[in-house]
Amino acid sequence: MEVIAIQKSALDRMKNELKELLELAENATRKYTSIFKEEKWLDNQEVCLMMNITKRTLQTYKDKGLLPYSKLNRKNYYKLSDVQALLEA
Image 1: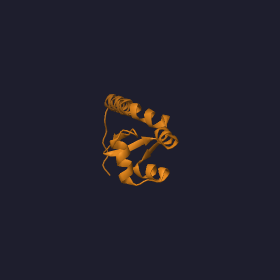
Image 2: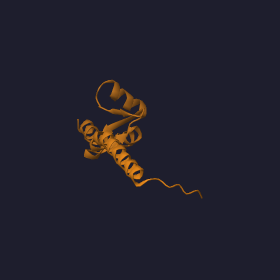
Image 3: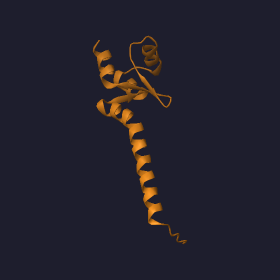
Image 4: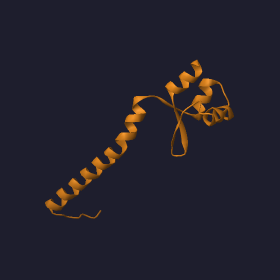
C-alpha cells in the first residue's frame, strides 16, 4: 500500500469542494424527489394491473388525453390519483 502525505490546508480544500459538490447534487435532485414523495406514482405495468386493461388500451387512454403521465428516462409514470379518478369516471 502506498502512503501519500498532503498538507492539512490541501485536505481542507478538498473537503470543502466535496461538500459543495454534495450540495449541488442534492439541490439538483431535490426538485424531483419532492415530486415523487408527494404522491404515489405507477408505471405502465402497475396501471394495467390496477385497471385490468392491456398495454394497448393504456396507450389509447394516453393518446386521447384521458390519463396524464410523466416521462422519466424513457419510462412513463402515472399519478395514483389520476388513475383512481379515471376508474371512478
